[in-house]
Length: 338
Image (cartoon, rainbow, N blue to C red; front, side, top):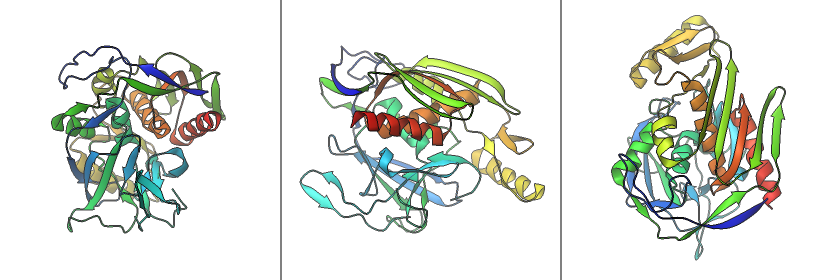
C-alpha cells in the first residue's frame, strides 16, 4: 500500500451546500472558514460545547490541543470509538511543541475513544463527528471541548462529544451553516491499496480491495433488525443526504427492566423522538430510511476510516461491521503503509 499524489478535477456545486473545488466524487481536503460552535448533551448526561476551528495544514484533527485523531490514539470504550491521551508530545504547529495537558461515559452504546487505558482522560464517542469531517472533506481541525457551565476547557472525567439525534446530522448542519472554504490545494494525497486487506471476527468481516474511489458495500443481519444492505460511492453530496441523517441503534445492558425503561424515557426526552424496544435492543420508532441501521453502520465505518488521516481509495465489503473490527482494518492498513 502507498500514498498516491492525485490531482483534483474542476469544481461543481452541490445542492444546499457551498460551492467547492474538486470533483465531488472524490472527498478532498478542505478547512472550515471560521470557528464553529456546537453544543448539546453527551451520553454521560453532561452538557458539552465544542469549538471547531481551522487547524495547521497537515496537522490533522486535534482535540483539546493534545489528542490527535489517529488509530494510535483510538480505543473502544463501551460501545464507542474514543480518543485518549498518549504521554508523548503532540505537535499541532511544526514550530511549537505543546505538552499534553491532563484531560477527561453512559454504558450501553458502542463507540470509538482516542489514547491510553481507561484510567486516563480522553474524548469519547468521536465516530459521528469524524464521519462528518470525512464526508465534508475536513482533515485539519482544532477541536476544543468546553464545560457548559464554566465556559472553559474543563478536563475531568472522559468527555463525550454532543450526541445530537444519534446521527452525524448536527455536525454537518453546523459546518454547512458556518461555510466551507477551499484550501486552494491542487493536489491531494490519498491512501491507496496495492493488495486486498481483510479483517474478521467470527462470521463478521471487512475486506478492502484496491480501487480508484471509495465505495462501501455494507450488509448487516441482527436480531429484531433483520437483513439490511447499503452500497454507494462516498461522495460529499451522497454523504450529506444519505448517510449523515442515519441514526444509531443498540443494546442496553441494565440489571432490571425498569432501569432500561427509565433510560429509554430519558433518551426520548433528549432526542426529541420516540424509541421502541425489542428485547435488549432499542431503535428509533419511525425510520428515516428503510435500511437506516445499515446506513448508520456505514456512517460509523466512515468515521473510523477518518483515523487514517487521509481519504481512502478502496472498494469495501463489510458484514456486520463494528468499531472493534473497523479499527482492526484501519490498523492493518496503517501497518501496511509504514
